[in-house]
Length: 150
Image (cartoon, rainbow, N blue to C red; front, side):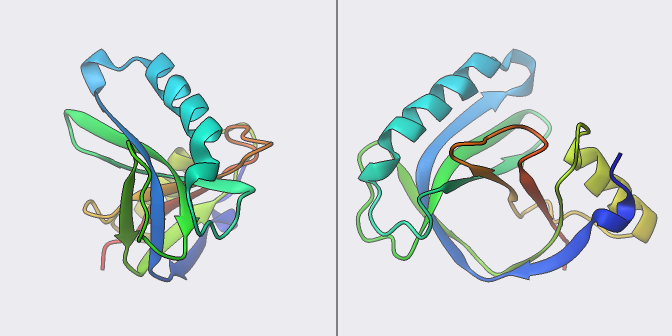
């Protein structure tokens, strides 16, 4: 079980991403749609020019009470060429808390850290999950980042 002491506070610089998005209603969510998009993204990722690391992909996400949007992205050095059916965007510099856990939900650990320290999640920011292309095992091989409120 991961302890709250495993959580780190970090600042990530501005980063650019190109990828594919899925928006779903919580009450009608179909996990199979996420799996299908992941397979499509993995098969098309080499269409993305200027990748900074072809061995890992990033899944930014944001939620509200009714919907969530989940993306499969590659970090890139520029947004000049965006393949058809994909989206390009920039995430500004942001403070995050981050953790990698073994067999427990990293979001539970991160939210417990927020509560224990009296911190707030930046509701306007995007959470990030960083996966290795050839070892995308949740949660043991995933680094999760939750944005901190300013």
